[in-house]
Amino acid sequence: MARSDHQTSLELAELLGKIRQCRECAAVLPSQPRPVLAAGTSAKVMIIGQAPGRRVHDSGIPWDDPSGNRLRKWLGVDSRTFYDES
Image (cartoon, one colour):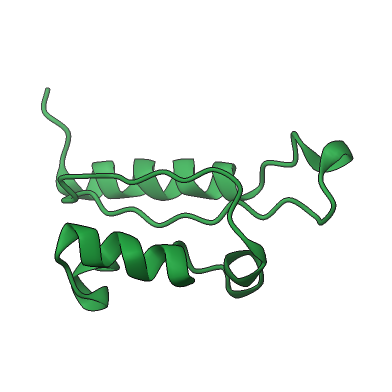
């Protein structure tokens, strides 16, 4: 049986919630863990980074720093397209 878009969205939301609550590395990090991520069910690509910098950690927005500006430039996409979660 094929999954409905609604079911897929619910499963993705549940997974993202679990990831955001992860504290596996708390004992070895200088700050409290704060997994920073965004995803959409229609996304064709997912970009994953390791150890976001202080600005991203504080804002909670993935790639919200000079490295994100550079990445978007390399990809040839604007911020609106990059952060589209639809």
